[in-house]
Length: 632
Image 1 (cartoon, rainbow, N blue to C red):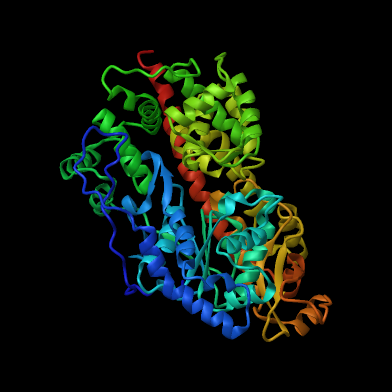
Image 2: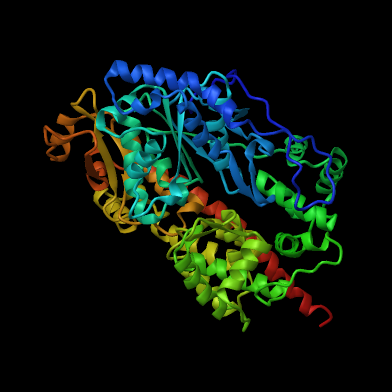
């Protein structure tokens, strides 16, 4: 775990805005977000220092920074990070008006981190589950760096979901640098990343399209290794490729605790009286939902529903049903007699039915959270066909979902995005929950073959379709995995064990890169395989194998020993960006099976926990059959 300087200067957080779309009245002390002029003044010393250092280093790309007005240009780029859209408001607002900082779990002790200076390692993964506010947290770090009055690094913020065929990560970084009026050339980039005055903030590794993941991962790894002075922070949900990196250290966002509820609710503008009432309702609720309020997003959604219902719904499905109804129509009801006519011509229930099918088809067609206009049309065409005979026009449906419900947003000319990934995942899960037995079986059988991209949706199904999820997905998955991996593998020869693993992970192994200094060694950068397996998120076998291989191999590893041991020729002029791949079969042949068998033993334990929990769910449901034998 990386060290954190918990004594780093922390910035005060402003009170929440009084712009309100969901409650009738709130007493709020409005605080204006920091002005562009103030940001420019605060950024000026860092701009001048970088300009001075660039001249000394002979880097010419910062010549435009000579103008006295330039800090204002930098400030405008930083200020753009401050404006966000949330489910709490239909209009963009400053994150300074509502953001409640999360804690990072450092050596199992949660600590607030508000400054980049708090990280003593320069390659960090901030890991969090859905709704923990990873993106807004990363934006806040960038803004706090400038508003701290002693900025040490210029933050460069990149949204990884925007990577495409036209724009890879390197291109996205260059474009971001150009937005700072930097003339791009090799010497300037080399200077900036070696200066110790730059930070690269990469948001949403888990949202990268699958086909771009490997290239993005390798480039991030390359930057972190080539420029140890460059602070690189990546946000991601658990279990992604970036977490396999030995270069990066992972810090997990801690769960939101009830002790933090008052401060969080204050930031949302909830009055003290309403906050107390809501927290008492959460404590007194017999609903299992109260146990799920562990993220800022979930607490925000609870506030939205509670203000309309004055109660905590009993079940997760009921909760999200009420949420949909609230965001679609409750605000109109508050206007006194006003009822908005949906442009689609659908009732609330009908609109929800189509939206659920739309969410499911978004995932089924392999799309991400953001859709182009053509993709939106494609998804809608399928969704309306699977919506119980309901009819409406795509443009009118889009108007209802973006303008009335605000569950999706129009971005630019050609993009429509879900307000939050959890919205997409929950309502897609709700679609599956309502399927008949035959179609439900088809879905879960498909999940036994591929879960990539469906993991968060499946986590909702665990709660809202628990019997079929356990019976049709978890128990068959565990049975199949145990048959492959839970026989006595310690008695297998290295070749036999390699065959088993290679069947699961074709051409698996470790990738090394030559170290910049000394150049006669190489360091592990990733675990590699040709495909991901279904259910990896359930028990993490790939990480256990990766850790086992990593423990078996020295790192750094002398190039000469790699060549001699594995009969691999490494070119003398190979750069540190070139990969050296060592097959897992060769590693096992050279170092034995002990570590692999230890990892597989842990996997067996995890599988048994999954099986036990799923069987309890199935048994509880099967027990209900006894009802029909009473009185016989």
